[in-house]
Each structure stands twice: as structure tokens, then as C-alpha cells.
Length: 318
Image (tube, rainbow, N blue to C red; front, side, top):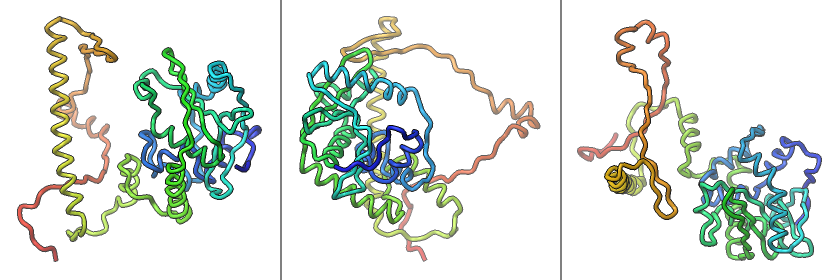
């Protein structure tokens, strides 16, 4: 593990720019498709952009402010002393692999990742579980550092303090390096858009990139029929699951209604069935009674609509 740059005197914008020079621990879970909040395409966009997003939110602010508290609690719980790393490091064999470490354990080949967790996400940490993208983040750090193990300390607001030890997994590290190396060399360095990943920002990119239709005629597609059949199966399954979910809701609503209740608890679940009032503008009436004003406040939007339906008969396309 080699030091790339000290961030003691770096501004947040400068720190973000240095992180663009490689793949970080928080990128790892997204690249392998295990981060529910970030996609591989989002990582690609970030690395290719010269802009840095220094916008903050309350969760990010609290995470930074409470990092020292989480580290202190970890030392109290385990007896291990920790120190700040104060730098971005890289793997000598794979220089694109970067690591921004929260803490390292004094006198041990081990690190510490400090997390603050919303009580709404407590179920993801139950029974010794650790979210998969955090596991990938830790294995990435182990790959960069060469350490033997890593600790994850998580403060779940108002609920509990959790400490997990994650051992070095050579098989996971080997696969992670292979995936990250391919992503860095084939996508980032060659500026090649990653394969579709199902994310919203990938769809937005496609619409923006291909907004202007280049051909009005119908074309023949090849090697997509199996995908389209699978799409039909998924659509049917989603409809069945939505109906099943609605049936469960109705079953619970019936119990609430029979007991004239708006709120209930069931094991780890809290349930509410309350009356809400939403005021919406009657567009149809407004258009009829105030046509000039309606036109004045109407904004035209243009989008691309994607549809798939069964053909009535199979004919060859010229």
C-alpha cells in the first residue's frame, strides 16, 4: 500500500478530484452491481466528468461529524487503539485501486470503517448481516492495503452500536480486482459506456444521447427475442406480485377496520392506515373556463416513449 496524497490540507473539491483518479472503496459495490443506491454507470459518469459535486446533505454531514464518535465507541467496545490514516492510498500492483481509510488499528494489520445508520435501515443489519456493498467496500480496502482483516463499526441512531469483523477473502478479492481492472481499462480509460445496468440515470443517458430519431422506418433486430420473451415473463410476474401485495394490504386493512384502528404493530413492523386530504387542480375545468390562461401556463414537454407489444403476424421487414 502506497500513499497517493495526504488530505490533511485538501479542500473537499480537491479531495473529490483526487478520487476521480481511480476506483475507490465506495465505487466497488456499484461496479459489481451490489449497491442499491449507486450504479456502475454513475461511477463511469463521475470518473469521466471534470466537475465535482460538492453538494452536501444532512446524512453526509452527520456521517462525517459522528465518525470520531463511532471510532471512539469502537475502541471502548474492543480495547483496540485506532488512528487516522489522513491520506488516499493505492495498490502498487493495481494503481487504479484507491483507498480512503477511516481509521487503522494501531499495532495490527487491520482497518476500521465507521458507519452511521438510519433506524429505517436497521433491518439490513439484523442477525449479524452487513449490506453487501459495504462488504465489497471492505474487501476493496483489504485488496489495497494487504491487511488481514477489517472492522465495521455502525451506529444505528437511537437503537444500538454494532461491531463486525470481516476477514480477508482471497477469492472475493481476486474477482473484485478482475472486475475493477476490466471496468477501469475498458470503460474509464477507453471512455466506453458500460453495459446497461437498469439504473434511472442510464435510461436518462439513453434518451439524451438518442433523443433525435435518425430513422423513421422500421428495422429488423436480431438476437433480442429471448430478452423480449423474458421481459414478458418479468412483466407478468410483477403484475402477480403487485396483486399479492395488494391482497396482503387488504387483509391487514380489514383487521384495522374491524377494530376501528388507524395504527398497529406486528413484531418489528409499524402500520398506519390514516385518512389524508390532497388538493389537486381540476385541469379539465380550468381549461374549459379559462382557455387563454390555460394556454399561458401550459408547458410543452417532449419525451421518448418505449413500448413493446406482440405482433399480430410475423412478417419479414424489408
